Length: 123
Image 1 (cartoon, helix red, strand yellow):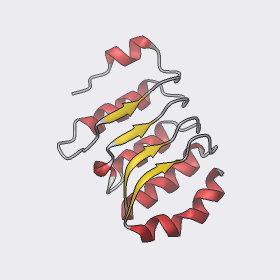
Image 2: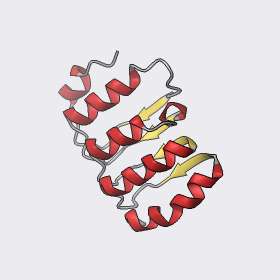
Image 3: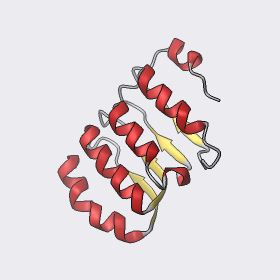
Image 4: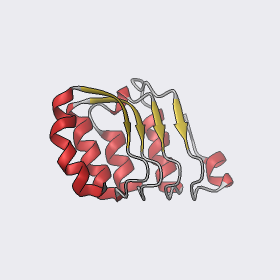
């Protein structure tokens, strides 16, 4: 799919108002595609977002988590991405928000080592 595919989907995502499940796993989005997803989240809601194996880093992830409707995310899948300390810090900052609906966050099969998982200031 890639960023060009997301750009083509963007008008649809923006016009829907709410999409329950947006599974973009293995779509080679990278940060460029993640920034477009964040743009969609500025205008519409997504409840379940799977970005597994997309090469998303702190640049794209931070923008998604800072989007206007990120607080409505209930489940986020980040498996298979290069998550390091910067990404963990972005997630921790998001989790400190009082208005988040997040119930499930999957880190499986990432570059995040065990020490980083337990060193993060989650709250």
